[in-house]
Length: 109
Image (tube, rainbow, N blue to C red; front, side, top):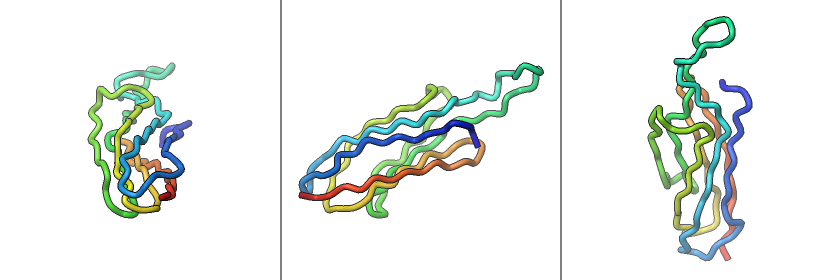
C-alpha cells in the first residue's frame, strides 16, 4: 500500500430529484512508474492508480480505466443524475493491489 494516499471528493450536500450534479475527485498518490531507483539503487515498485469507480446506492455511475501515463494526484470530474437521496461510494484501485474508498451522502430536496 502506498504511503500518504488520501482520497478527496466534493459532492453537493443536496439536490433536486432528477438533477444533474457535478462531482469532483482527487486522490493524493505519488504514482510510481516502477522505473525509478531509490538511494540504494533498488527499483521502486510500480504503484499506479489504474481504475476508478463511483456507485450511487449500489448502481454504477462511472467506471474508468486509468493508463500508466496518468499524472500524480489524479483529478477526475464528472456529472451524475441524482434520482433520490442516497450515498455515493468512490473506489480507487492501485497496481499493488491496494484499494482506497470513501463515500458521501446526498439529500434530495
